[in-house]
Length: 71
Image (cartoon, rainbow, N blue to C red; front, side):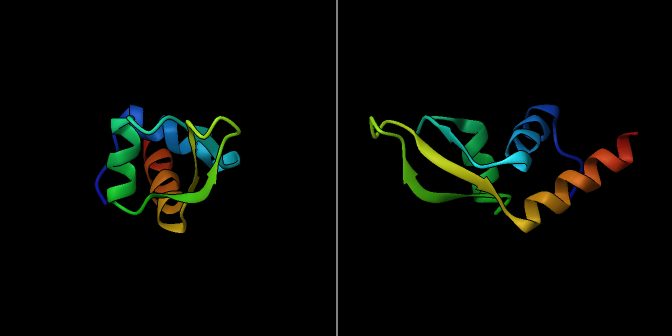
């Protein structure tokens, strides 16, 4: 995979620590999910307005590759 834009790397960075909840209308998440870098866990928050996402192994590898090249 090529180098990821900073906004995608930032989201992968946040998810690399632990799964997080996000709203459903997020273009960054859609981009990462289409490329199998993140996935939905199937959980929703108490208000059922946000979905939980986690980083995949492919996402972790892409994040590590991108950050190792930049520094």
